[in-house]
Length: 468
Ligand SMILES: Nc1ncnc2c1ncn2[C@@H]1O[C@H](COP(=O)(O)OP(=O)(O)OP(=O)(O)O)[C@@H](O)[C@H]1O
Image (cartoon, rainbow, N blue to C red; front, side, top):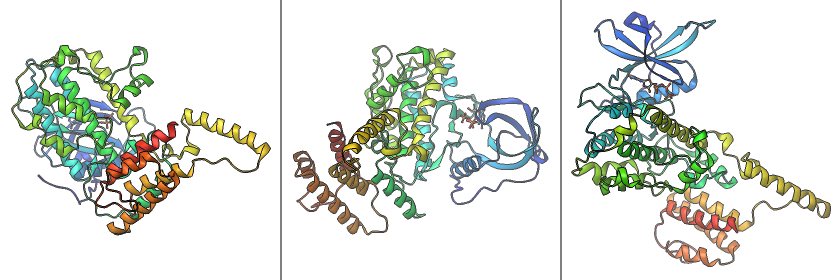
């Protein structure tokens, strides 16, 4: 495997037409950034795909991410990039554009190809999954999350039966060094303690990083894989809306299903599917990202390593219904968009300033109460009781320990926060029972604790407290 890891891609500034003959009329496919075209290299006669994007920081980021990942047998190769001033028909002026010279993938998108395949079996599905998983392992191993893993971004090299499948479109790929943004800590808002810990973490983050399986963005890729495998096996998605009128958007009922992990394996298509296949799906569609398989677990899973039955699958039948398929794919995209939301800092507001309608309502109520109270007393209402604050603080210490401290000092900080939370809780039995599992002796942990597990248990208690 060729690695571009540490080399920055520098776009060429000469005209692409010096070396390539670009066919501006033939379109290979169209994404949000415009059509992807075919070009022929003059010196060799070889064909390439050219993706043209406006020269903006986001596109530059896409190129650097793609460049880093390029060279793997299951990642579409990025050969070179041009920076050219181009004016397309209908435009009043030329614009600086980046032209990505990509390996030409002539075999079509994943589901389209499968819809045409007679005799698609579970064994084929496992072999396909393995290829996709290897691409994802390549990315995650470099701490890069793709964040847009969907069937349109999985392309076949050619139409032969042995054609490899490869991952493309690094438009949302992101370096994922293990930020705290695991969904269990960011359901609708982030507590101020967590925000503060995050800011500190960002400041402290060193350039050296270790691959960590639990980060939010990577876990989203794993969830996407779960959805893709599910669809490969049966042809329809695991989560769908009850209200067909606005099927393209993720409505509340669907969101609830996703959040609760409510899906099933309908008999008709799943009856003959092997247990290991169902096991993979279950473990990838696990709601709690902490329990979800990571990429290493997936690559090692029996389904991808042991003999898989040659059972004929129903998926091509459903996939050949174009309207259905478009809807399935659109829904998946829509969910990916939602999952990327924690990205935008504006969505990471502490509860006091969040814009979520429920929270806005809550703020209104608080304000009304406040107004009422102001008439009687000048003191501001407390936002969170000290116990809740102490619990949140302990969670923040678990998931984002100060990097400037030694592991020993980090453990002490966590223990101090734990003691404070216990004092504030007035010896809460539930907390004590939970702590016994972590060998808590009253003031410290007797042996090493898994911080994420502890954070998870604390969060369960916190949630229960907030409900009361
Ligand atoms: N190397 C390639 N060879 C052949 N077709 C390609 C290639 N790259 C992309 N395509 C086609 O063009 C489509 C859009 O490409 P890509 O996903 O890179 O663009 P995008 O504008 O970032 O799209 P998206 O809307 O998915 O973010 C793909 O779904 C695929 O059908």
